[in-house]
Amino acid sequence: MGNICIYYGEGHGKSTAAMGKALEAAANGGDVFIIQFLKGKNPILAEYMKKCEPEIKIFQFEKRDEKYEDLSATDKEEEKVNIRNAVGFARKVLITGECSLLILDEFLGVIDTGIVSVSEFTEILAKKAPEVNVILTGRNITEAVKGLADEIYMIKSEK
Image 1 (cartoon, rainbow, N blue to C red):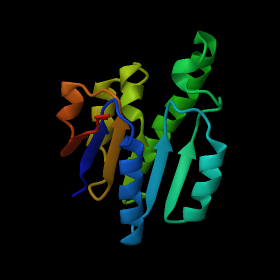
Image 2 (tube, one colour; image 1 turned 45 degrees about the horizontal axis):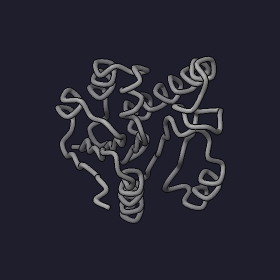
Image 3 (cartoon, rainbow, N blue to C red; image 1 turned 45 degrees about the vertical axis):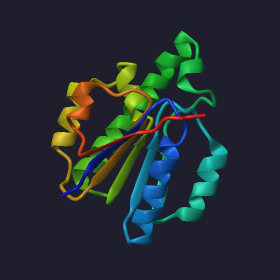
């Protein structure tokens, strides 16, 4: 049965921890999909990650280079369409079980911004293929989202 794991907190290292799990899953014969949210395009990372294919694949749906939080209101509205497309792709991957590990990087922020509601995400998870493990990352977590997780790790900087 696939686990749902969350890495959250204000500190750096959430995506890095998820990436470590991606490498571990790939080393054990799994297929990993990583979908990034709210970070803008990162062509250098995307190009580097191609070296990890076919075991690890990264998907970036956003078109702007800037982080979502740095965009104008108009640009945010345009990026919301791309983010919703990424959510639709994540839904398909979860339902079909195309990978053994799906990392939704900064997805907690998608919930924070209201682009996806907790209830919509709960419905998506309810249709998840049982063998798919999911990792969510982000800064903030609500009690409702905590209730969806099997494991939760708070990442914080001490210095």
